[in-house]
Image (cartoon, rainbow, N blue to C red; front, side, top):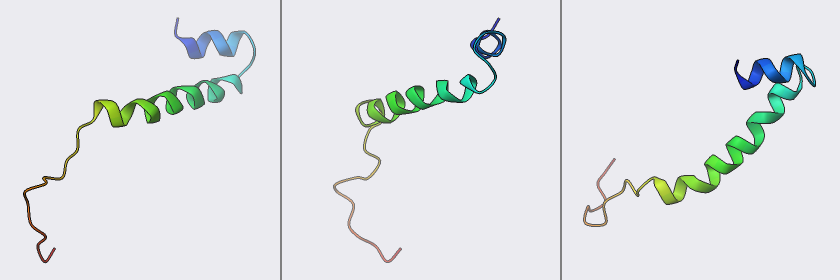
Length: 48
């Protein structure tokens, strides 16, 4: 059984949406540490 099913059967359907908030916050805090910089420092500025 998934977490969504447990929450639906227990506290109610609305609690499913509250689970995503802490997961999103943790992901936003960990993203700068795990995702590297995509811009090269050696590349000059072009027209685009």
